[in-house]
Length: 199
Image 1 (spheres, rainbow, N blue to C red):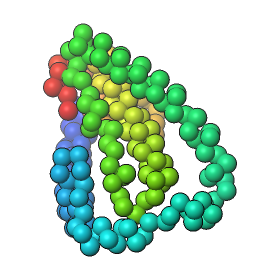
Image 2 (cartoon, rainbow, N blue to C red; image 1 turned 180 degrees about the vertical axis):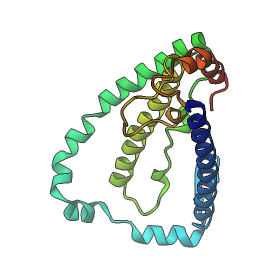
Image 3 (tube, one colour; image 1 turned 120 degrees about the horizontal axis):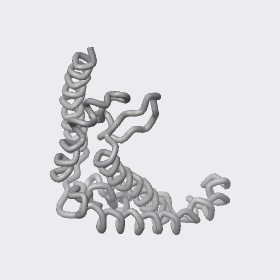
């Protein structure tokens, strides 16, 4: 019965992968209709779009007057997280740099998770660009860290939880069923070998 359930789950995961690929293509097609091209690290818009963006920009003084007061008041609290985020970044990067080669796990590329491109949008003023850069860093860092920890979990303990949990990482769905000791003993090494070529 467990083998049948595992086959059914594998089939569902395969269908999900196909749908995710279709979604990715559809999103890319929509983005390509937005009149921009990516050239290296630069995003270039058509001249008419650039001009429209410039007209949409809210100048700093107007932005300051029309901004919600609670946003200005809580700013120091939000930006107070910068130091803990930097420390987290250093620690998790050092962990990956020092331990992943020992375990034989492929390293996670920072550039795949920490992407900074919103500052190139002409309709944002310099404060909005600063906010966007901070959010790009914070969310990118958490995604980068999640993948590092997911690979670590897959190496040491690729087992699902008994209880349903929210916010699982992408690798979790491939983990072994809770309580299936035979599968763990037989397959844990296969998980470790697969991490050498992790994507």
